[in-house]
Image (cartoon, rainbow, N blue to C red):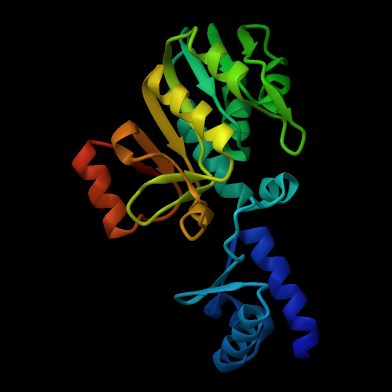
Length: 252
């Protein structure tokens, strides 16, 4: 296959999966590792990808990937994470679900629950849970972010402060090697910090595509996270932080 045909397909795979590996692309295209490494180097030189050990990721930026694209990234793993998360949440409790494609997957898995009060700043989640009359849904209000149905800003933050949650399920835009949760939107960061403050038990749901991503705004460290559900082994530094702060790590 000609390089001019491979390159767009490599970028397409990176957008779907969040990352490409030399080994995976060699198998996919039936070419040598040297050929794939050359393709990745040229894509990195043009700013279309960013090289990491063993492969490449979408380039770091101060802007998040479009929401519809994020919905398709590693979807099977998100569903697996969501199923495990839903099993940790009992009936008859108060739950917060924040903005994110993985938390939307958790909402879908909660549809068989009863007696929940779910508060959310994600209008997509409100729509999902409206199918179950045994779940009371409260939407925070706030400034609507049309790109993903998220509600942010002071109104959202003030609404959240009126509640105390048994469980909060949150996602993140990126996860640093040391376990710090990062985001792109300062208004969303403020809301996320409030969610954590108002919750007795905080579960982070994040698939491994977030491990290699970078975002500029700090949300929280593993000190604030009760449990972390993910699909791939954590870095040694992140795992050490989880152990130090008593964060339970659950793999799918």
